[in-house]
Length: 319
Image 1 (tube, rainbow, N blue to C red):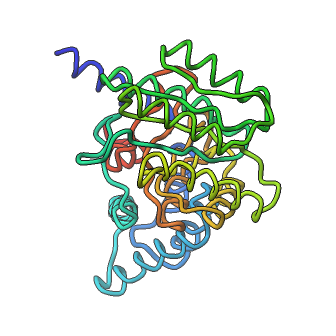
Image 2: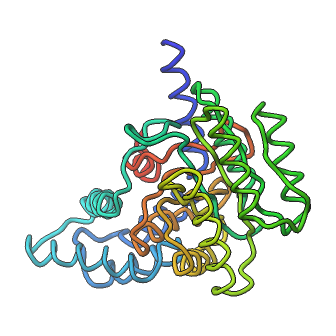
């Protein structure tokens, strides 16, 4: 086994371990629901609906999945319980595909993207936003990219301190100002410095407070306008970080942030140790936004690019 194969195997094990509770919750309930039955009937579908909703797949997405299975039952006239798991799996893969959630290959910037490639990171406090930024910086740097960080969450002293610690740990420059400074001004300084030093990637942290939608919208719009003046087209990516372990709360946060700004990608953290991993499927489906990264632990390597097929394979217990 080569080093790369070993590395991939390790990542797969982290994914399996991270999704173990969700898998256990979903499929042990499903096994009980079909026990002693050979064909899929209304009772089983009612149970499946409840299982998906309690796994935080979300009501709307669950109803879409159930409807698709019902159409199959109506078409084929007969559906055995042994086939149900495979059909459920196919439907989840196809739902993720519809939301442009692909198989992210690695921590790279899209081909043909202008440099510096600017990622504006949004999300409420406590979801692992700054940690996600630090881990992204580490992975991009490991792939040979020149990375700059911008501490534009000037509302919280701890945020500037935290991102500075990550910058030191990873060995990338952090552009910051004093607490209470204008976030747009920090973003301007960061992009100006990054541009002057031929940076490949710039990651900008933003304030994680949902004080009110209009205030949030105005602040993020101002930051974007200022960045666009320095690097036309920036930010090329707006990454919303959500805590997967909060289940329905994550849906509510996604609703508020997608209303306040154009979110182009999702990072869902803290999936290890929770049975709410279904949230990945539901949020991606409901907001039609691709999941780009998932957090599966505290370690610096535990942030992974989201790979649709691998995620579903781990969820359904296929290695």
